[in-house]
Length: 129
Image (cartoon, rainbow, N blue to C red; front, side, top):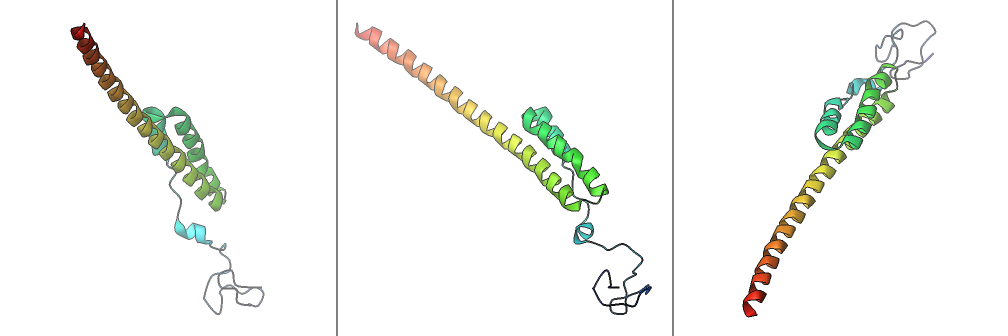
């Protein structure tokens, strides 16, 4: 039998490791458990859905809803991946919406300036005639 924490060879039935003192009756602790439960990013996904971009927000909500169930079943790597995907989809929805509004404002400003120029040019040409 080997220690669940440090890997030292132990006699069968030994309760505590002679090297590190770890209790052998407890389940092994993984590095993911030590890092703590990942954030679901559900609030960010919902805000993205309501305020910004519905398709990206819905995908973020789907991934955010999978975080807790993956963590509770012991799939720590999947829980972290789902958390990261929920955050990424939500952030991309916000970024694309911001880019859309920036492009919209630029196009409106260009249209207004073109219309003003065209009106001035029309007035100029009628005065020449």
